[in-house]
Length: 267
Image (cartoon, helix red, strand yellow):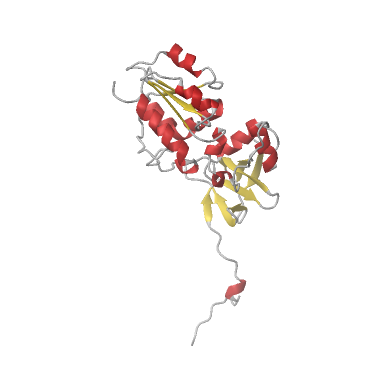
């Protein structure tokens, strides 16, 4: 006799299987019941803690079909206690497990501000520690020629400088041209601020808004995107979305790689 399954529910009525996803730190999900969207910062027995773009924390139970990941229903599970080591660093370089930081070189890389330094650390930090390169930030580049002179770059102490909005005809381009040392290299990206060097898709926006001249750019961006006018919190949200070099624009990637090569070149 033909055998029939005891479950006579039509296939179209059966719930679709829901994938299980490890609640790794940094994973961005949404809790559909509250609409709270944030990155995983902690996963403990039975709960997961999310942090939204404004730094607010919420704790949710790890329940089946409990979260949305890129619009799909998923079940979050605790990650394994011993995650596999990545084979690549965030910059795309081959990872060197257990490598110790090299003693800092005399050379340096200067960037314009704290946000620039944090972004460089996020993506190139592992590489810089192995190479012994220290990144320091300036409060603007108006006095760059005198800063370079005070540093005194030489064959064994090269200086690389990353400048925002370095395009022909700007104040920044004239300042960069005034640095003439053979042992200093000034490069830059075309963006008004380092925020723009993060791909809009990584942040979850269609594009970076254009802000009228004369307005504070960062505050204007927050207003245009409907974010609270807290530029510090906004930056932390942007930075949290950067996982690797793939989340940055090529115009920044090439310049930073070139500066690292310059500073670490053989004497």
